[in-house]
Image 1 (cartoon, helix red, strand yellow):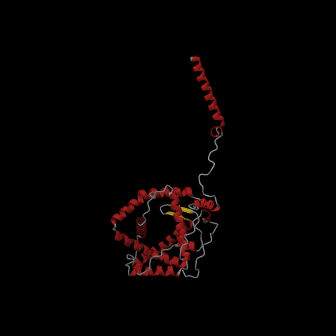
Image 2: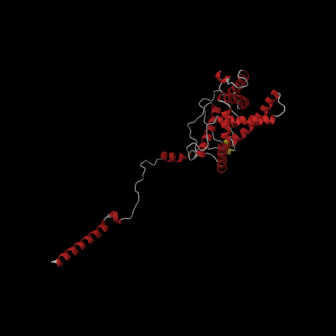
Image 3: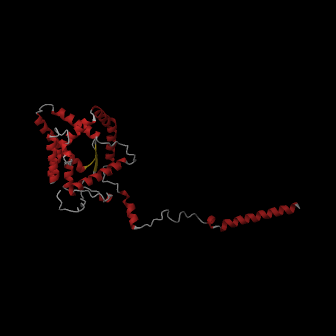
Length: 303
């Protein structure tokens, strides 16, 4: 009897082994090589429009061949801002209350009307020239040398413009993106424009010193005036480095500056900015290439 039982168990084991071997040979899931995913994850049709939309994702790119140098200067500006500039601004805002700082801002803006008046003439814009001249006369007299902005209350808001804008209106391309030490985002055209504005300001302040009868100590007064300008300007700018919440802050600031300057020039040329067209990588301006400007809806309108 024991021999019969052992024979039955042995036979059952042989049948089970044969069955498993058969399953391994005939089951496609076990015998075929892995083929990976057959269908794509996305079910969106790969049309030409979709392909173009994917290609347009690089719209944040700006012509920046000096990127390595610019990033180093950006990092230097951030350290300078945090260690020196912002603490100095905190002292400035602590010593001078808000009404005093407002008066300083108005006086500086009034002096800048000379720059706007000059560039309004160069831009052949009667409206900007008239506005700058009227504001300077009104605020310098009724506004107590510009401390009070009476012109704005009379319906003449500021339309500040500079030599960089004039170069843009004349057709000068923006050129390479450039980060200036202490001053921040710029480009080749705007940097040249800042130089022209500084030269005009130097002549203007010497004219003011002549009117005031100041003959000695002009250098010290000029340094003090430039310091007040710098502190007042930074106090009115809420931006703080590395607090945008973006890991790509440099690229974001670069794009925003380039886009803003494009819109500024369009507004000066046509009276409005055509902001609907995306700022494409393939459309940025190079020194040897001038991008055609959009045709305004009414070219007969006087600037």
